[in-house]
Image (cartoon, rainbow, N blue to C red; front, side, top):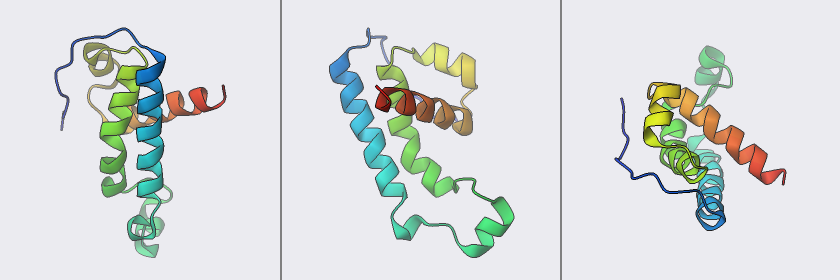
Length: 101
């Protein structure tokens, strides 16, 4: 499901990026709460893949982080086709890169 909000492309700036990084970090903390931990059955069936519930917690903050990094909605759609896993992977990549600075 493609759940993008139309956005006018803004040039990235550090304030927006910092805010988006905090939001993404907050989503990571949220999805790591015990109530979202996978069941033993889920882990046996899916390994360490995030559940749909955990992906939903991360998706909007990941999209905002990607946009704050200067990627347009059109570029994101072209690159990911709206695939949640690819969007989250890109969000985590930006998050990791920015926190290493």
